[in-house]
Image 1 (spheres, one colour):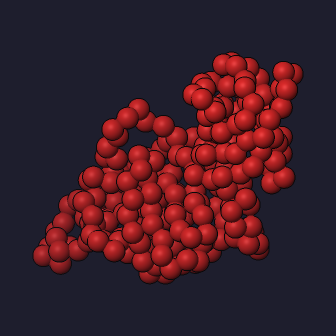
Image 2 (spheres, helix red, strand yellow):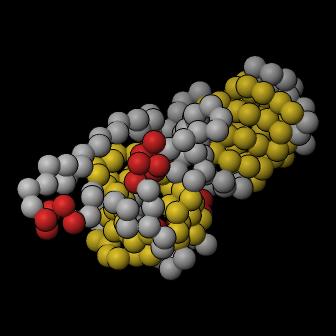
Length: 210
């Protein structure tokens, strides 16, 4: 399931005095993104944003690296500094103030696609025609890009297996040299995708789940 709902609300859209006009402009925004740091890439949901900061919610404990960035689905990246955190929610300050409208519009220089995590996992890809070793180059809720040493055909049904994941049935959608684009037969919910990413990159973040 893809998170597509976006709610925009300017909390100071109708200022009534000088203090309100000078206050930060907070906009509620429900959108999937990812937190990128030395521990890995982790799914989050942007809750609200202003020119100086952002609040997010994750599906597990928050990554603890001091050097962390917010990356949107279109690849735009913003360096962050932690202000406060509680449970699975955190508020961050942008290292450099941003143009809120630019973040909201999230311009795309190519066809829009789902949130992808750059995770490298060793796999075994198997089909009726044979099996081969592979590695993931990126993963989304609906599929993965892999590099494989075995030849599979377009539209062929395959199964990918690795120690950290259950077997996943897929269909080959495209092939270029040793690179393949796979579509999962059963897609992940955003929450399950987030927990899967934490499990394979930093399992400690899944401890003490509420």
